[in-house]
Length: 75
Picture 1 (spheres, rainbow, N blue to C red):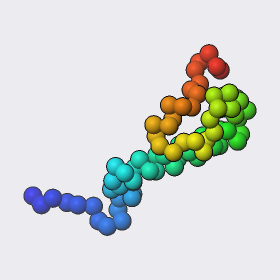
Picture 2: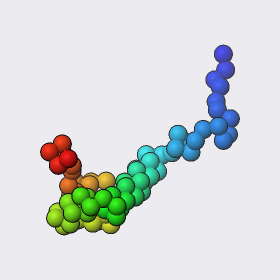
Picture 3: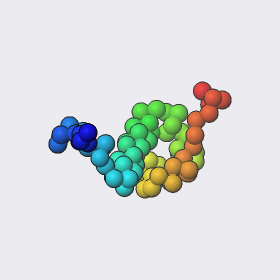
């Protein structure tokens, strides 16, 4: 039985992306989320400011460790 492959354009680009492309997209989306939270949620703006970080400080995925995390107690 012959192997059937998807027709060109049948898959979303993310399904054929390389690991580097996926990591880049994750970083882009994470930056957007952090910036959105900073701009629109006073709790996150205050938490980021207290920790001395700004969304623009996120340059690599490992930089996320510098950002405060929200716990159940915070809510």
